[in-house]
Amino acid sequence: MSMADAIGRYVHDGDTIVIEGFTHLISFAAAHEIIRQKRRDLVACRLTPDLVYDQLIGAGCVRKLVFSWAGNPGAGPLYALRRAIEERVPHAIEIEEYSHFGMVARLTAGASKLPFFPLRDYAGSDLPLVNPRIRQIECPFTGERLAAVPALNPDTAIVHVQRADRDGNAQIWGLLGVQKEAAFAARNVIIVAEEIVDEAVIRSDPNRTLIPGFIVHAVVHEPFGCHPSYAQGFYDRDNEFYVAWREISKDRARFEAYLDEWVYGVADRSDYAAKMLDRWRDLTAADRPCEPVNYGY
Image 1 (cartoon, rainbow, N blue to C red):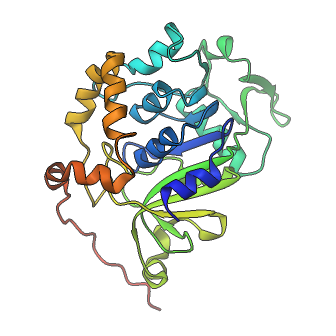
Image 2 (image 1 turned 45 degrees about the vertical axis):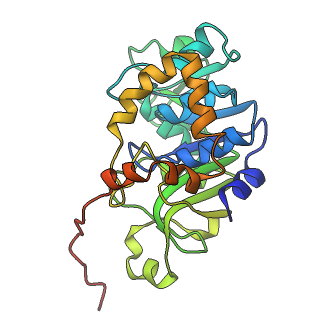
C-alpha cells in the first residue's frame, strides 16, 4: 500500500510507535507522512532519536519520548527536542531515558513475550534515580542484585529495508540495529522497502531475511525513503544536511519553513525526491557487491 495508507491505517493519535534503523535505514519518509497526517500525542520510542524524532517533536506529534541517546550525530544538539523540554514549545513532552542496552533489553523482552529483561547495566549510573521504571531484582539462582527494565511492545514498528517481497519478507544488509526485535515486539509492522522483488529473490538468499512476512501488516515501496539517512548499497548519508540541520532546528522560524517546504509542501516521497534530483545523483552509491554464496547441496 502507499505510505499515506499505511500510516493512516496503523498509526493513530496516542499510539506508541518505534521507527528503527541504526545510522542507516531510518524511515524519514514515514516520519514525514506522520507529520503530514497531523498525528498527535504519540509515545515515540527509539534508541537514538536523532533528526527523525526532532522533526516529529518540533511538528507537535509527540507526547512522550522513550530513548537512550539523543543528539544530531557529529553536529550537536536537537534543538526542537530542547525547545519542547526547556520552553514547552510547541508543547511540553515527557522523557523516559535508558542506556542503549536498556532499550535493546526492553524490545528484546517485548519480542520474547516476557514481562521484563534483567541486565547488569546501570551500576554506578544516575539513570535509575530519574527513571523509576528501572528496577532492582534479585537473581533466583545466585542471589545477585540485577537491574530490570519492562518489556516494550509498541503499537506499530516502522522498519526501512533494502528489499522485500510483496508479502513483507524483508532483507537488510550493512549495519543492523534492533529492527528484528522491534518488529517482533510490535502489534503492527510496516515494512518500507527501497525495492520490491520477487519471492524467488528472497528465497535465493534466506540468511539475509531479517523480518518474516507473517508478522508484517503493510508493505510500502518507497525509494529514497531514508534521506538524509542512508540505505547501504542505494545512496549515501547526506552529511551536509545533518550539519545544516543544526541551524535549521535552532531557529524555530527556519524549522517551520523547512516543514512547510519539505513535508507539507510535497504530496509524498516521490515529490520530495523530485525536488532534489541533483542531490540524489551526488549521493547514489557505487557498486560494491559481496561475493556470492553457494546454497546448493
